[in-house]
Image 1 (cartoon, rainbow, N blue to C red):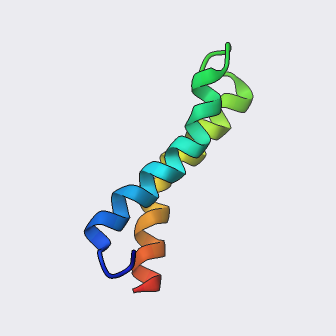
Image 2 (cartoon, rainbow, N blue to C red):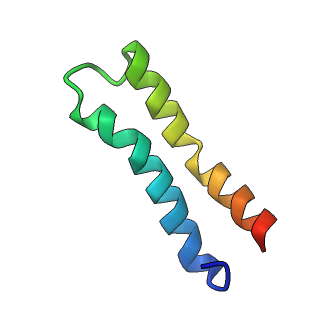
Length: 58
């Protein structure tokens, strides 16, 4: 995966985002309600996490 960073980046950041966003999507509550807001924000930092992780690993 590190040898192909252009492929790895979207896989990592979308994977990270959807891991945290799926519970929000399946919830009956608003995204702005307390627990959903935390999951939404954690999923939202996925490009930063992916970029830093791939930069540190490569």
